[in-house]
Each structure stands twice: as structure tokens, then as C-alpha cells.
Image 1 (cartoon, one colour):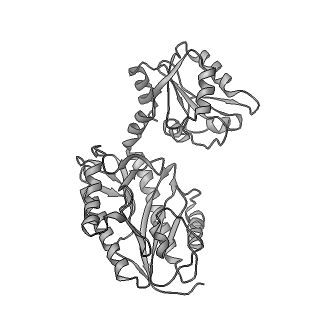
Image 2 (cartoon, rainbow, N blue to C red):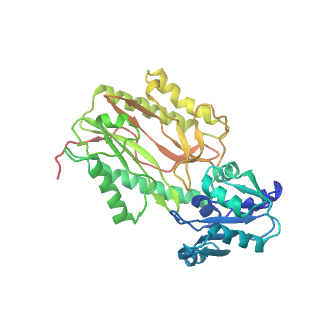
Image 3 (cartoon, rainbow, N blue to C red):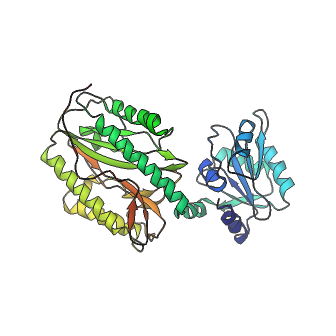
Length: 370
């Protein structure tokens, strides 16, 4: 579960204890995943003592029967969780002067409660960067889960393509995708809200599905993903419904060329900035640089967006085992938008996408709403 790496890090940095507050990080280290909502859920780890999970009382038995084989302690809603945590820590170890926390996750209010409970201690060590880098390199087991999530995304694309028809709404198609994923594949959670955007709506990358009705002879953009055994997929395809305009077909082919070039360039040794430039230069030279308005990609794993960002100014060297998206886009107000996206893993030979749906422009024949 990589918990030994965390404990080694604590010892190397002379940090006595760590308070892990992000549920995704807790799942990464323990195998137990749940959403605590407003309640307190934490992993307490130590450089010289055994770790434990602290969670609401109603989740204790669930945690004990998960992959986690360590101690689990709970609290009732009327109890003060911070005082209970203090007591558990004092029983666990005599060394809790120096603490590490996830600065990118722990809310200020909870940080203050923890600091007041475990007084005479300092909390000035940030774990977030260490955890980001630890999760950057995926194990073979993690990669298999990401591949399975990618296959579910491919299934979802086909459901979406099959439901395009004149007069149906973007929300209807998105709803059919989500429903059929549950019905046929048993997928209970998407990695983010399924996005379907038709025509001019696709020029606004994160608008989401609306009640806009599909019209003949326009592009339809899909951006979707699932969660498979705790690991995310994220992929985009853009298809033609009928015969789009010459301008729309032009930007599609430019975007497809840029994405393919970046996939071919994604090998160990290139930097994130250099990889971004491969796709961005193609789009810019074609005259559409101002319409590529986001980074080339992002990491993926237990979160749909993880470290690193594949973008300008990032000199991180790409290495084997890193997993991220490659998703150039062109978004022109009044014309439409195109995004083609695959997440994949960097191997010693290149980049292996998790999604396999063909990227040649697909033409959906005109048809009436059922």
C-alpha cells in the first residue's frame, strides 16, 4: 500500500507523525476508500509506531473489513474527535512534537482544531509534494485498473454516438451514457459529470451538457470518464453529425494532427513543456493558437486530475510509469470546438493510450429522434 514509503520519509525528515486528511490519499495508503462528507476521516502515521485509521463510528466496521489490516478507531457525532485523536496519539507514541500535514487539503478550521488539541507541537512540514511525486509513478496493478477504466470510456463513447439524433438534447445523451454504463457495465460512478456539447456549445470547454438540441450538420464533443476499482478514466472525442462546415472539418484535422504528434513524442526524456509545445506549435502554425486555451494534459490515477500538469513552463522530465492525458483543443466562439483526448502510460518505448476509440473524423448519419 506504499505506507512503508511514507514511514521511511517521516524518519528521513525527522518528522514524528503525519495527519493524512485527503480521502483519496488515505485510500492510496490503506486500500480503504469512503467519502466522509462533513465528518472527520484521517490516517495517522508515525515514524516509530503503527499507523491507524480514524473515522466516524458508522464506518468503523466497514473499514475493518476492507483491505486495511491495521487498527481503526471511531467517534460518535456528539463527541469531540480532536480530543479523541489526541488521546490515541498519546497512547501510541511519546514522540509527536513534529507533524506533517497535507497543506493542499486540510481546511484551516480543522488545522486549527488539530493544532489546539495536540498543543506544543509544530505542523510546519508539508506532505503534499511528497505524495504527489509518490503517486506519479503507477504500479503495474494500477495501470491495469486504468486500462479497465479506459475500456469503460470506450463503451461510453459508443453509447453516446448511438444516441445522437436531430432534436435530442445534450443532457439526454449524457443521461443515456450514464444509465447504460450502470445497466450494462455496473459502473456506479463517473470520474466527473459526463459532458456532451453540440455546435457552438463546444466552443466553451467546460459548459457541460445543456438542454440544447442536436441539429444537423454540426460537431458534437464528448468528454467522459468512469471510476474502476478506485481509478479514473478521462477521454474526449468529437464527431460529425451530418456534414459539418469546411471550417469545422479543418479545425478537427488540425487538432487530430496535434494530438497524434504529441502521442508520438511522449517518451522518456522529453519535458512536460516540450511535449506541450509539440501540439501547441502545430495548432499555432495553422493559425489557431489563440483558440487552444488550456494545458495539453494532466496526470491521472485515483483522481481524474492529478500531478503533473503537461504545460508550458513545466520542466518536469517525463519518465516511464507516468500516466497523464494528451488533449489539445481548439475552441472558436460562433463556430464550435474540437477536443481529442486520451489518457495513457509512458513506457520505455513511448505512450500507450488507455482508450482505443478511433480518432478519424466519424460521420453520424442524420436521423430523427425516436
